[in-house]
Length: 303
Image 1 (tube, helix red, strand yellow):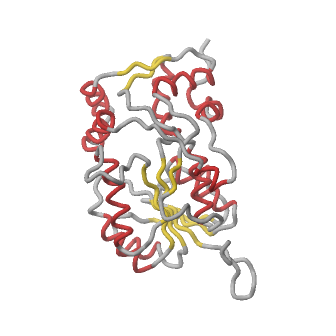
Image 2 (cartoon, helix red, strand yellow):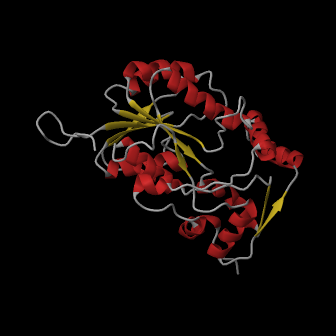
Image 3 (tube, helix red, strand yellow):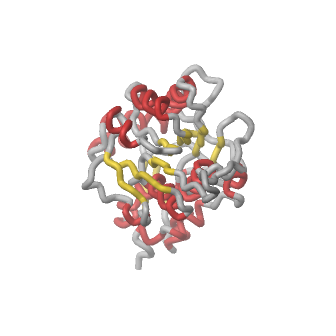
């Protein structure tokens, strides 16, 4: 355990910058850090951004900034002991300026990456995983020695199905390979544990955060159906149809192409780990539990 005492023996309250603080995971991390007594800086893109306020707690500070704006990040990093870093872009090149600012400020960095990274591969399976691999390399090459949390698919991604489930009992989409879906609340608890220094490293490698079971898309939809008391089913659609639908929904073309590439080329997950338990002291929760806890978001039972 590190010594968190201040110069007079009083407990030191670390200051932690949380990026992606308005997203499903970032707001969970920020809320938990505040509950543990940390000073939290929640990075937002503008003062008008109110998303994620439900997880805000007294003492959390909203800081306006952009990960691609070096001057703004330099200001946001002042006085920061640690950073929870989520890189949101499909290109790692703009991160070079950010990494330079991190190296100058020298906080502890916890980076959210992906379990889909193949450390033996020259190139990764798809553009999304490649960016994560590139970011890990950038941070390491800068001498930051980041603590890397490689997360499997977040359960909160299922929220994207809510509009379909409010309208009917079928979820249609690309049949992405099976994966060890992990509750974002477990990832947040793991992130808080390492940000506050409560747990040590697992050797020299990254933490691999997974749920307790491997699930297909159809499995997830069926478990949501159980939570909702409805007979739901998943209908796979071809890549071209999935692409056209996502474009029609207004998603950026580059993101759509990356998602389609992931659905076509990312290999199925075949591994679960106990790393959530090692970090948090309790086993990872199931997707069934997540579905039961969030059933109201999907419209509930239909008469």
